[in-house]
Image (cartoon, rainbow, N blue to C red; front, side, top):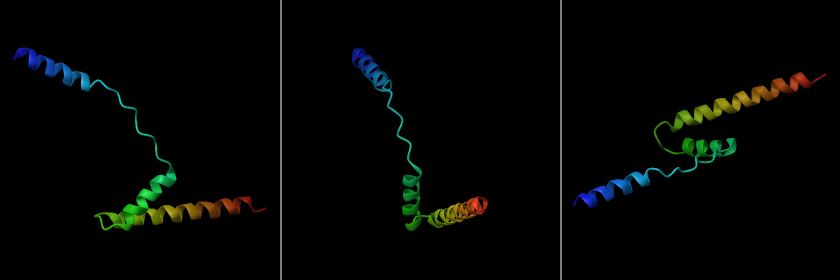
Length: 73
């Protein structure tokens, strides 16, 4: 009986020793697509996600406008 328990503990320890590679980092477009899907859903907090996307779009548009003014001679 002790042998079975010992082998079980060794097997459990061996299973935890495997290192899995970290997941690949998502691109900004992939993150935005996921956020858009969540924002369009009926999940709790989806309105907040939509609001954050609107704010992000507004800030990006403002930055593009400022950049275009800086390039105008």
